Image (cartoon, rainbow, N blue to C red; front, side):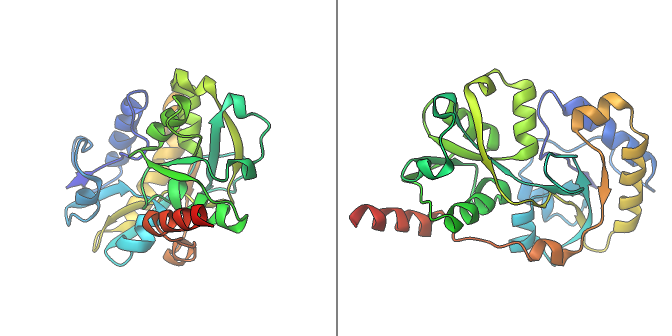
Length: 257
């Protein structure tokens, strides 16, 4: 069986994630001794051996719905968000402090990947609703890499998962060169999933109990506040915008007008 908590797993949180899984496992009828790391996320998510992982809302609604069981949604106590919700944070360099989001139209936008709710879907909907079109797209492969791209000048602004932004500010020195511009409307945060046919209720109870009983340092390190039940329809209702190919076509068309 596979247990995988890779979405917010970085050197500073790895030991806390290990403790989190060890405590969850105590409340289950079985499970691997250690978390899986270094494996392709899609391979993990689609494996029939999957016991527990965390995915993103966009992959869930576009490719995983019907192929995995929804277990529950963690609450990270994020500012301006109801329990179980998160949003995207637009960041830029400090020299752009005080500039409205509209001033970034025509400038370079960094995003982690096109199947990211917080890095692509939410910000693209937000920008489209405000008639703001970037001037170029910079794909980075990760939220932290998007933030770094802005910090070093490879991009002018980026959209980050709100919890990742919190972790960057806690652990990365380059965060001091970045400022927050605006936030998107909250949507359900990254859900825990398991393979079809597994006992999602047993997992929900195990995770809920573990979060409640975790030591304060581990809970604080992972920003965990609780566990929320959402239905698949809560995720399926979130809009999915056009991808980078169509967006780049719009950018080129705008350059010709």
